[in-house]
Image 1 (tube, rainbow, N blue to C red):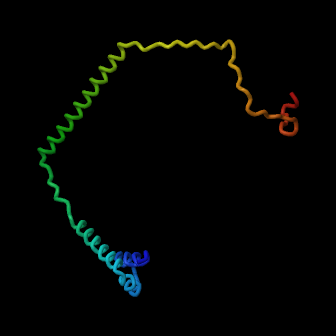
Image 2 (cartoon, one colour):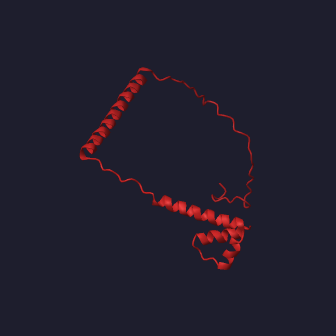
Image 3 (cartoon, one colour):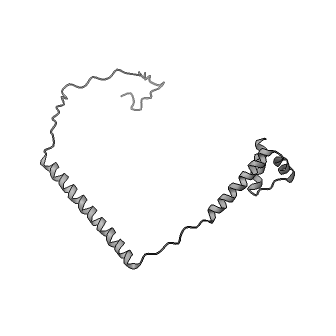
Length: 136
């Protein structure tokens, strides 16, 4: 069996135009017929999945919606209050501890040594350097 026979059968199942002679030749092989039956079974299974619908959604009564709204507001208030208290405690503890002081002395009386040159550029007047200030 060749991949071309599989392609012919797949195209036929997908609804594409396939010559009847090519389809007859492809279905003459037992493996191709098994493939054809498998494709049809998968297509039928996918149709059954599409037919499944979600259960109808039951709307909540106005009282239930009000209770949900109150519960959501209570959660937000408790979360904000808890965050405020936790932040206040952390800030209070941080204020009690003095930050460490690091003293650094930089001596600028002697300059740091220059690194060795990695490339030297020679400038020659008139060749790669033109004096625009009149030689000064």
